[in-house]
Length: 416
Ligand code: PLP
Image 1 (cartoon, helix red, strand yellow):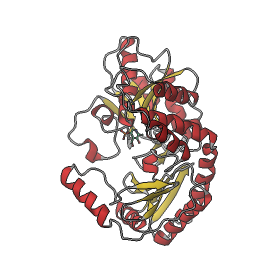
Image 2: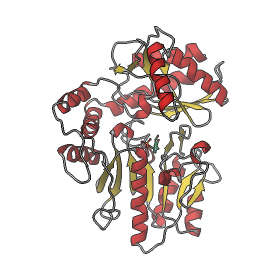
Image 3: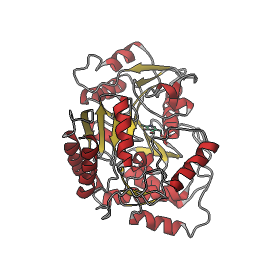
Image 4: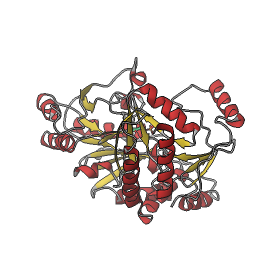
């Protein structure tokens, strides 16, 4: 499926051209979450090239934002068509365009019946709007501003509203103001003593909403236990509390189903999506959660890049047409099995866990994880950290056996 290509390091990265770009950025911009000195120039299939002629096998998909890998024909077609239209960016909440209508139709076709959508620019903004929809619903029920319930280790974005419910990294929260929040433990095991904490909290407190991921992404690729997610759904339903699922990282086929929550047999009341969708979206059950007044929700652009919306719509079609959900399940199983052989080896890997192409690799400690990430990068394989001491493998959904095996081979060489 992926291009017949191989990772190839011709100049130890960063080479001179990449180093020049990095130097310029470090001089002019705030130094954010850069993991290693990779400068992306172009890509084909599951491979990324840098300006110095290196080719990397990409097990990051740009944190899931490039689910079709690079230079996918369906996306190249959209880019080619859009290159003929000079009105590429519109104020998407103030004016209409066909790309907005098309992405909405495609997006709703992969959601349970009865949902509506509101498009925005990013994942954090999708979460902002999801929680606003929930606050608004509680306000319509005559309730004041109440705390939201969120999980320890959760990541919901870094804008101030979303950040209040994010707990994955202390550096992102320290010193910033917070909306009222009650934290519960994110249970990965059915036998966890706190498995029904949500029910107890909702019995004792009025809350605005419960928000959670079913797979904690930034928090470390932690997979919720079946009982935990079912308990969240049952408790929120019993107490009439909006249940928000954040599928920004886990959604759009990453786990072998459209949405990770499908593995748990539950449906949310409100959901956030982004990354693979190219734009952000808050989806909500209508009419119950639809704000009762026009203009309650808006944003400057509202996903108003027509190119992004067209790419998002084409991505959904390509996932359907290319049987990429099936591919994610099959290739994810192959990847997980191959990587599990590393557990307990020299590289300090203690556990490999995953659903579909959302695979977490846990290390003994952060030092070994960070050293492994850097060594893999120098050997032409891109992965990303997750949580305190895990790394994540999230290759494009188009990945084939050869690339999976190539990645496992590089990892075995570096870590085994
Ligand atoms: N929610 C989850 C689960 C995420 O993983 C992320 C980003 O990683 C966000 C929200 C925020 O998305 P963005 O970075 O597009 O603002």
